[in-house]
Image (cartoon, rainbow, N blue to C red; front, side, top):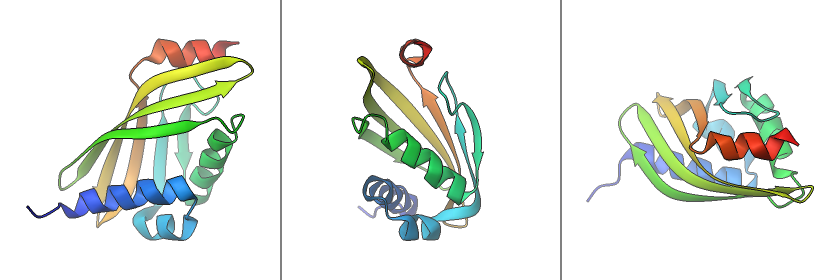
Length: 130
């Protein structure tokens, strides 16, 4: 079976995020990429551009150095990708334990947009409420 090229694109992006490889991400993401954060968090809304997204990912990773993401499934088509992942984070004695869906729009072999959707929004809201 031949692997879909967008599957490789998504997996390379996830690996580059995991290790902080900004050079690879610049090659895989569109310059005008938008990351849309849904749900109640300090970053709710649109984050526009590669550098702003790098800052966002660094801030999320700084959460008491306990932020952990594990990827369960990656599904791709010619123009889209869906990533199902589990996020666990601890901050000030509170724990976030939730599933997220990342929906990506892909064009010209680059990720153009990522929409981050919590599948248990009430858990995210409770985590950030205090």
